[in-house]
Image (cartoon, rainbow, N blue to C red; front, side, top):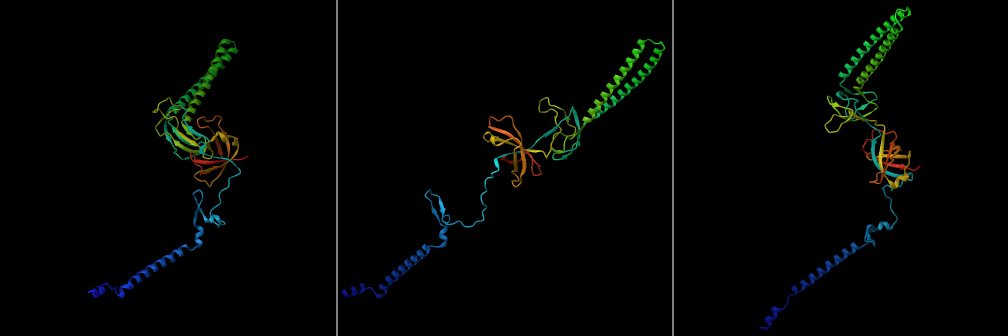
Length: 326
């Protein structure tokens, strides 16, 4: 019975060899992991680029500890030693002209629109001239009648003069005839003035451009009532026909801080660069310094005249102005 139990508890040789195989597999895995860790820890050339922590917590590349390598980046721009101050402003027309009628009238025709180029003396608006044309005809008739009266007064004076020489007419009659002649001549002068006035009003019905420029705004339409000045209200007649300016007469309007005013003087040379085309530069000079500052902003208005502007400069766009050192 004891021998049978001992036989059941005896371990077979094949079972004894299984733990040894498992232990060998574990040792093999550990060896592989050790080799892999060693390969990963082996120093490489790329490790020179690894970042190290600074004392202040920021990162520093190891490449900063070795001589700098060549790069294609452009060098930092150096400050311009010739620039005293740089300020931004807006391009404006030096003069904006709004053409108004000289009297109450009705627009008969307008021949321009916004953006049109016009020349000095070009007809741009025609007002209704029927009334003033009639006045011209009326003054022509009055002048003709006055000249007839002068001719009649001259004949009468000559007749009285001959009779007075023969003592047929008195000296009083001669004086009266001479005064009538002078009065008739005065009426002619008055009639000529009235005719010139009527023709002037007729000429004012034709509105012409006073300069070579560009139409900035078209402010009226045909058949619209216009007048030279407004008497208040928002529904009254228009007081201007068109607005125009010379595109070759431009300035940059800027507000300069009072702390920088010492760097600016009249006629000081400037360099103007439009923000829309930063690669383009134009010469200029300080043309106007406002006589009064803006207390609320602590600035003074400066206007810089642009020399030789071209089509790239558009009014109301922003531009940068460099005030150059004298």
